[in-house]
Image (cartoon, rainbow, N blue to C red; front, side, top):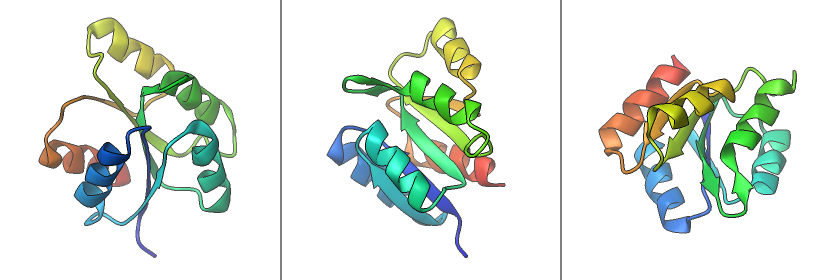
Length: 120
């Protein structure tokens, strides 16, 4: 069975770009909101979630923390994507339980490498 990756971002164009970038690593599903993310996880838990910190009205850090606090989803690796890249922002991501934190904009190779490392 191929590796499973879930991309969660509220911008459709960015979801498509990330999905196309990561499709060589495995099966990639997408979600545009926290509710959609939870439904996809319930249907087929991914190995890695690429999660935007700013999801419109939702907070990616809170979603990350909720996933890591739940024993049913705590083993899913999470890579946070954010335009906020100060040391305090990265520390907040780590405190929320993220396994990685990547600045936007990013290069396709950088994203592939980061997700590949989380799948390893």
